[in-house]
Length: 474
Image (cartoon, rainbow, N blue to C red; front, side, top):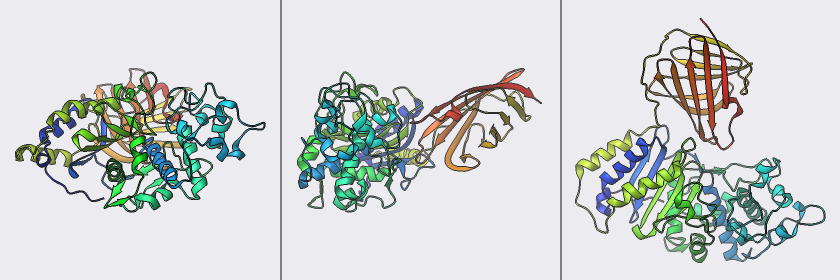
């Protein structure tokens, strides 16, 4: 979709309010990757933190679940499925010998959409296997389906497998034919596959922020685009409405997520609903304000980071929204324009001068990450894992684009800074499919060097988890 771009004040939004929203997030160290705001069908903010751009394919994680819901809704509308169909009837080849347990046999597609399966966790994560779909039919159930909300990514993944099995095409291929191609969804977008070749319906979508805004807008308009009903209106209304209570066990990401759940969509405060993916991937509809907001981010290192993003909108943006247009504020708009043009990923503030300027080489003792040695000079931290080498070029107080390993192309942005004269902190922003970050804190003691590492990712990297120590060699 192509949205007209206007000054925020023309549609009743204060430029200063958007500026304050960005300040709020920056002060709380939120790694915001993009922010798009649409009001009254006009784009009033489109911001990307370098190196992200409007064409960057971003990992959307669990926002993928909402796309699975859209596909299921289309199949309901065409009569291919019914909400009360039992999922076991569609996968007889995956059932255990002797047939399914009674809890699984009762499970309906509607139960799965509402996250009320008989499982208390994602089945293929509980017992790792290449057959993610198969695990859903052989895991041990611990309660009757439909009892209560329990977030279960394997439910979404199995629904995606159902779409692909019945329609004979990938999830995105099916949605492209129904709606995505018409609204200009990027041709380059794709969905990561599981080990068996099924699209990861729980977390695999790679798309642009503009893609997410276009789909959000289509849903908010009841599935209508240029007079054509691309998605079923009644289903969309049900999917984005309250279907199950999440007060007791859905609010781990903050108070907003205790407001209820629809069919793979979350309810929020302010009568809002959203698509939500781990780390701050959000596509929010505020019907009362006729406003849509899309973010991409990485909040994984921050406790309550996603709620922090939402609080920025509730506390800073919404107070600057009115029902009528505002007087032009050229100064505030110009400042906002320059602000969003200069956005970048968070740096590590350089607070001190290092105690040494010479190269530090350390042979390390036995450690959990399996690191054998490290070397620090004024331009690079090098980590040795036997024959494998991780090169981390840096400029204290600045950002450096690189790749994580010498033998693979894992793109990253490296931020580093001396926090004290003997301690340097590295924050490594991982890009692409492996969205997340690594934290490395290197302390140069009088006799020993100690490196503490943490991997903030969906699947923590063992090479960057734990502590390594050794005696300095000068």
